[in-house]
Length: 384
Image 1 (cartoon, one colour):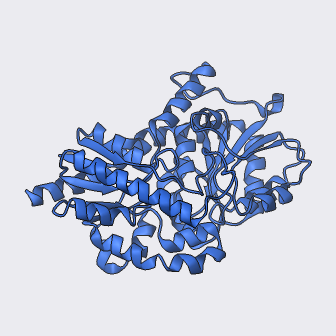
Image 2: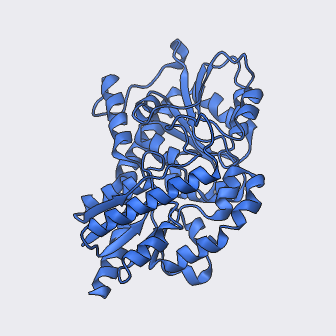
Image 3: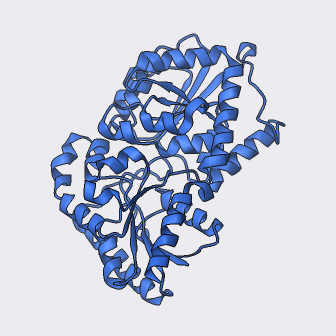
């Protein structure tokens, strides 16, 4: 079977497509890439903040150039049995449909128009509504639609659910490598790294990274951090976005144990996260926040951190006893959980070991793509 990963996706910004490609290759599937990254203004913590917004005309010109290059690459590539259109490929899939008229198309549909509005804030909702028809056309063009949680699948129209498969996001190999390197540095390879002793001057090291959007619930984190004075807890906050200043204001400018970073180079983020004990997830209360399992909880677990996130159905179903959960939007509960962890290093060590074991079993690329591999083989078999 030959699969083509097609589109303007950017794996340095959104690693999902890279995980799919790696997982399929580990299953022995021939994957060719036809990719011209477009880039996105909401790129997150691994891409430097833009010095200036390029403006709509310039964005459209850049998009047109990417599409022209993408078409040229596709025409030179060997003919695939299946085409997977990467994340944010609402327009890309229509190009793929014209380039490969008799080839089954798979749309990686991680985020709906409503989800984007949830992430960017209410101001974007009216503008994004114009994209709704494009999104529905993209879903209709796909033989198979990929989503990341069962809750996301249920949001789709009933007519689309039978051709939808749930493929968790998982984590890229670099995150597992970072976790192993951190264990080795602690002299604990191959066992879990040494248990910290917070009562002997070691702080509980906590990290949060991602866009400061309503989905993340960063102000919930900020309010919780403001209640940790006197506890041996050091926090690293990485990212930018709509709610960054509000979050900083809640923490307070004089917080000595909180470090703020706007961005981190791609190669540096996994080892930086692996240096910490606890990785924070999402704490928002919006519709998307309640049905998502974010990249960073997969990545944090793969890097060997304990995962502390909101108590939502998809996250609890995925992590079970390997995660620590607090009610969404509850900063008091989050502060209490961090204070308890700072006083119980054995529990931190247990959660780290449990999250790491779960990640190596279920979050590696070959594990997350298993449902996709099964459906692809069915599709190619029926086509033959």
